[in-house]
Image (cartoon, rainbow, N blue to C red):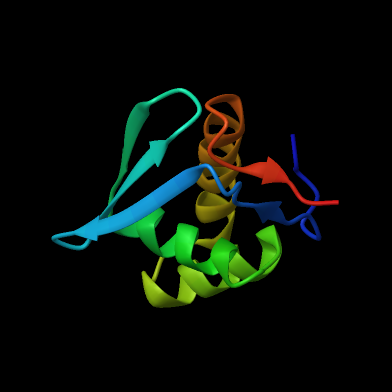
Length: 93
């Protein structure tokens, strides 16, 4: 799983995302499973879609949500692990 601050994740073409009322709904066409993200998770997803590294995304989220960077990084790693496990993102080369 990507844990280095310089790591990036990529979004497979079989993962779809739509924002509904400020929250993302993800769909894996491979597994046909839905996954929901809250406002912070949705913003994280957007940053990953822009190609940001884990460190860049954590820094942006800490500023945007006025939260400690360490907390954001730990929460983001947990979520990324879960998204990788569900096949919704992949470690980028």
